[in-house]
Image (tube, rainbow, N blue to C red; front, top):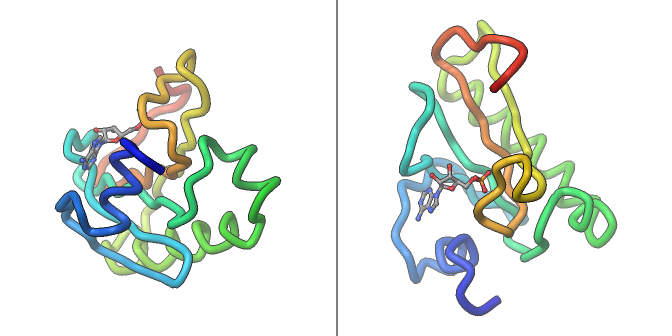
Length: 113
Ligand code: AMP
């Protein structure tokens, strides 16, 4: 999709600190990290959010889960981690290409802000 920064990262047109790739996903470190580990897992397919991705390609949702597990293990997040899909501007979504935030490496409070 034109002008989507995450599509550009998937295609390699925009550089990123890529930590994991699968047939269906690419994962890279967030430029504005909120935790020692802050990785974004994105489907290669462009869909705006989790609901749209679930409807269009549920296998991609499973692939995100698998990628999260692989990355969490590689990053040593055995104490626990958080997975967040901000959905909609009211929830803080700023990039409208579905993505999971994987956060870990520090104590994570609940409820979130
Ligand atoms: P959200 O606000 O949930 O849509 O998350 C978008 C995230 O993408 C933010 O945490 C940004 O810091 C991050 N981000 C935006 N552009 C880039 C980029 N080029 N490389 C890595 N992370 C990015």
